[in-house]
Amino acid sequence: MMDILNTGERILLEKETPLMIARHLYAYRFVKDYVCNKKVLDIGCGEGYGSYYLAGFAKEVVGIDYNEAIVNYAKNKYQKENLRFYRFDINNLGTFNNRFDVICAFQVIEHLSEPEKFLLDANKILNENGILICSTPNRLDASPRSEKPLNKFHIKEYLFSEFKELLERYFGKVEISGLSRGKKLKFYRRLKKVGFFNFLPASINPVKRFYNQIDCCHFNIIKDRIETALDFIAVCRKLI
Image (cartoon, rainbow, N blue to C red; front, side, top):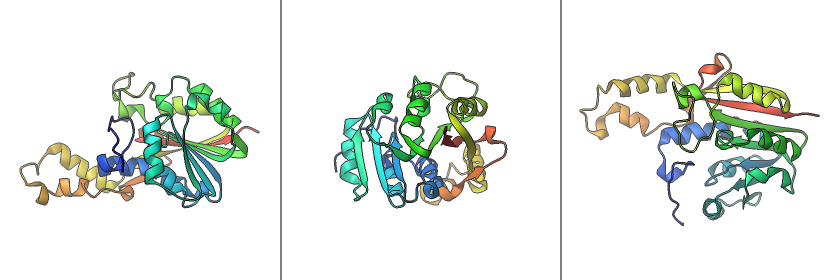
């Protein structure tokens, strides 16, 4: 298996914490019922773990990323008959030759200098009754007290109201859910901040042991007070 430089721009399973893996994988688990027997495009597929997961439910999955090395890595690591990976610049999304029932774009829109063009192009390549499922980090959590993103790879981060208003300009119906930390994760996060167990070796430190075993079950979806969420996950139905 070829090695990939971990720049921090995307999730690499072998080089990322269980916390971040679970947070990013949750979005793919969230959409599994939407993609069953559908033709799916996974934009910003990165190393391919999410596309591979969706291929277990979808009729066909195409994963695209602008980085040639990461696409080649995905092709080597994840293989299924109904799964393909391509190098493609999403700034040219409207020229894509294929049409899809579902487009997934997780943690992508905050990287774009022209999000409006992206949303227009997504509409163009969706089939009738197609949906875009789009996630982005909440600016209040990702860059607290700062309008400028703290993540050097992000161009613009959104508040809930901003994200909703943007999507509703280009899609007929937009339903937004929030990704939140579960109760157990919130509890251990407080313990970590206090540092009460820092004197213990890692092997018996309950906080470090918990963080080493985090998975998707330690997050949940909220429908109320979405403006407080970690991430926003929007299901956007195409304008007819």
